Structures are given as structure tokens and as C-alpha cells.
Amino acid sequence: MTALFTGFVAICVAVMARELKVSEFRQAWINGLRDELSEFTTKAHEWMELYLDTNAHQDQKHKEEMHSKLNGLKYESFRAFRKIQLRFKPSDVAGNNLLDSLQDLLDPGKVWIDPQDTKGKTRYGAWRDMADETILQARHLLKEEWETTKNPLRRALRKLKNIRASL
Image (cartoon, rainbow, N blue to C red; front, side, top):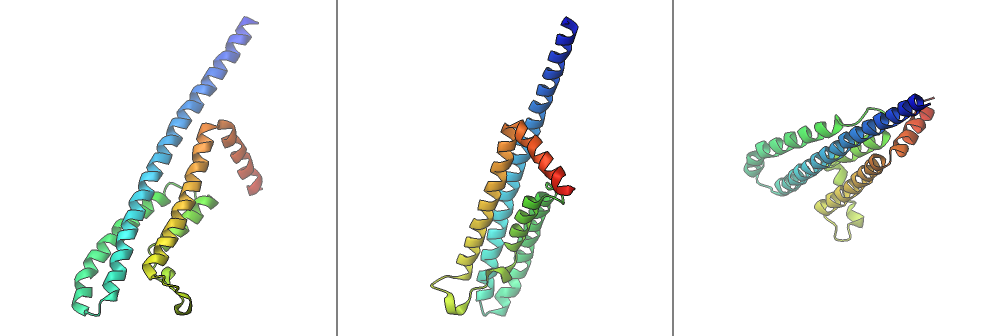
């Protein structure tokens, strides 16, 4: 009986140690994702602001001068975007939705404003609204991941949901 009890306690300790380690890795994942999202949105913001400013100028020489700077910022943004993209499984719906929203931040066509309905809004203001929505989406995803990290049972329930959804 003592041996059985000792074995049970050993298994419980091993499971708890594993959960603690998984939680540490998940927290590191959350912190890394938060840093990468911040880096990406900062670069995307800088790029969009420069893009809109450059295209507002009529001077072709100015546009040519800014071209290399715009490309540099764009590629830095895409580097940060790819790092974020590599953190998510291809089947992660919430992750893919966030990735789509992030990619939209580098698409000037997404900040079109209907001339009939501007109400004082600029393309930059429309971009800021889109960026704010994307950050809100990221905050929800990060909060969900944090709650899962705090509560291991929640992670088990999510796995069960994913299994049921794939059937």
C-alpha cells in the first residue's frame, strides 16, 4: 500500500513539474510574441506615415529619394511579421486572423476613405483606427494565452475542442 501511495505521489509530482515547465515556456512565448508585435506595429506605423507623406508630395525627386527608405522600412516590417507568423500553427484560426490584420497594416489600399463620408478623417486616421483594432485583437489573443498558462485545465479543454473540431 505504501509503495502504491509513493508511486501515486511521484506521478503527481512529475505531472506538476511538467506543467510548471510548460507554463514557463508558454510565458516566454507570450512575452516574445508581445515584443514582436510591438516591433512590427512600430515599423508598420513608421512605414505608413512615411508612405502617406511621400505620396502627398508632387515632387518626383522627393519620391525617388524616399523610395529606398520606404523599402528598408517595409522589409524590416516584413521580417518582424514573418517572426510573428512562425509562432502560430497553420490551423490556428485566431492566429491567422491576427496575421491577416497585421498584414493589412502594410497595405495602403486598406486605408481608403470614401470621399463622400470623410467627416474630417484622413488616411492616416483610418490607418490608426485599423492599427488600434489589430492591437485590440492581439491583446485578446495574448490574454487568452495567459489565461491558458495560468490554468492548465483550460489548456486541456482547448485541446479537446480542437480535436472535436478536426473530426
